[in-house]
Length: 251
Ligand SMILES: O=C(CO)COP(=O)(O)O
Image 1 (cartoon, rainbow, N blue to C red):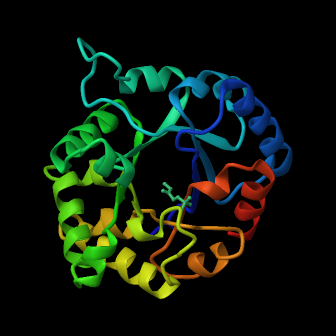
Image 2: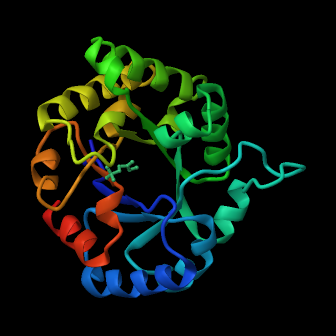
Image 3: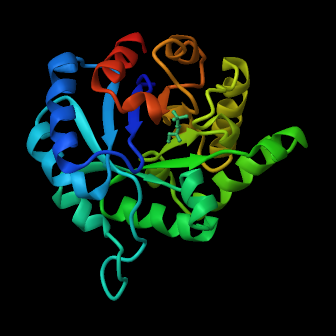
């Protein structure tokens, strides 16, 4: 069994202009230029992707988007397709982030369509799942996350499942400074792997599962020591290139 891929992905969310993104890329590459593992991914706003392609193509840093349409093309004002992202050298796309689920009312059905569209275009989805505080307090965290995984990956075959990355991001830990304990994060990631194993055992054992929610240079090493955590999806701490490079080093 080949080792699972370790991935540190930055999610800039709605931060950075084109000029700021170009500056970031130069600064980051100076620091991580030769890093072979973990794999580094920067998921930037659509508007910054073309500039980042110029700076990062053929470097160790992979490029990702934060959303895309489930449609291939057509009358969908304001949407961006998988093929448009491919042209900008994206290899990853975050799908189903909790901010999109909550603020833009994205449903599991839509997210499942997006996952399929991404796979068809040969983009690697980073599928985000996670419970909110109330669901955790009511003891429903596992059920909620299992339900998301099952619905978002419904109908996929083993070959497709093998090409997916899942990020477990408890909503109460996002941007709050409250990290899930490494033990809680491990338990949820193990649960996700178990859920995928019901669809395909071999896809589950090879799948990279990331943790996200207040990950910092100071807590990444402990998280990465857990057997079912293969990396992190990092928001705030990915915005400064020097800090993100330190986080990658510490992983
Ligand atoms: O939502 C996140 C990454 O997608 C996590 O954000 P923070 O790292 O800022 O908590």
